[in-house]
Amino acid sequence: MKIREIKAFGLRGKTPEGGWSNELRPDDCVHTLIAVLTDEGLTGWGSVFTSEELVKGSLSVLKPLYTGQSALEPERVSEILHQNTFWQGRGGSITHTISGIDIALWDLLGKATGQPVGRLLGGRYKERVQPYASLLMREPEQMADELLLVKAQGFRAFKIGWGPFGRRNNATDEAIVRAAREAVGPESKLMVDAGGSDAFWPGGLKWALRAAEMLADYDVAWFEEALSPDALDDYVTLRRAAKIPIAGGEVLTRRQAFQPWLEAGAFDIVQPDVTKCGGISEERRIGWMARDNGVRFIPHGWNTTVGLAADLQLASAFADTDLVEYLTGSPFIDDLCQWKLDEDGMLAIPSGPGLGIRINLDALREFSGADLSGVAA
Image (cartoon, rainbow, N blue to C red; front, side):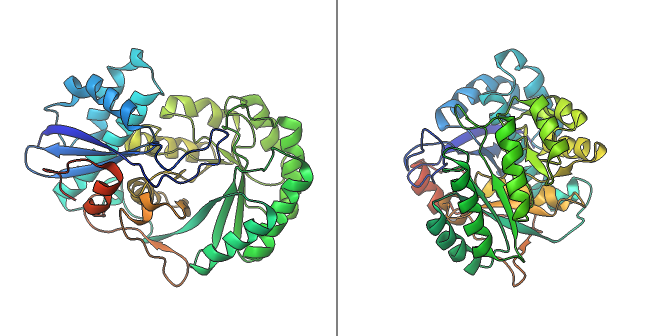
């Protein structure tokens, strides 16, 4: 089975807020689905955390390398793409695009063999995993109202992030977290994401140390992106001093970038994003490296329904990965595929071939405005 063509479908029209300084608008495109078409009629699906224009530009560079390659050898093909585009800029749009191709090739391998990706990764340790609802931070009263709505949907773990946190004053930070904890109750998991990868992040090490001490008082399960993404030494200091786990790594790509952070002890929890870091092939290696360094591996998942499906398959293949991120209120998750929590607030890991999902092509047509002829769900 050979790769015949790769198509890109940028998602627009209902792009959710990101909490960024330069806030996203509904028609902005920051997520692009990838469809790998084969000479035998099968379609594999991937997702890229990059705008459609950059993905299509990357595909034009990669096309001579992937055309005619085996569609059933994701790690080999992805490594060929990485090795032959180093000088085009490792870690940028091309690496992100290879991530989507890699996810789609794993999907194809699963479909061709009739097995879920998690089993092909070495075996499924679990059949379900707890999703945590991922929401933007709001003013305290509004934050509580939004969390109560999501809690009513069955979620029992919550992450709040970005917004005014760390950008105004310490009193506001604590008021938001207090309101959130009171809304979700003491029995629920609550995580806080400062959003240190935002443009010109103002919070430094001393702010992060003080914030971590406050968060510990509210039994916060982890403190995410407390510092700017390049502050390795400060992350090490924060992790050693903080009473709560420190998480990060969503902007890093490929295992080579993660290695110094893991070996230095910068994180308690590492959060590679499968739609950026190099795909399933690369994220599995990062997960292994994390385990070898005593760090928990929990995927970052602020992306699409395809990214969520990939995270679920990865979670099934790691015994101690007990959470996945679920971006609540995003049509790019809820409308492109149907997900349902069980009575325990858990999400079943799809057991069908490949990623185990079927894309709603009508919804994809609405979000992308593209011609989907020749593309299978």
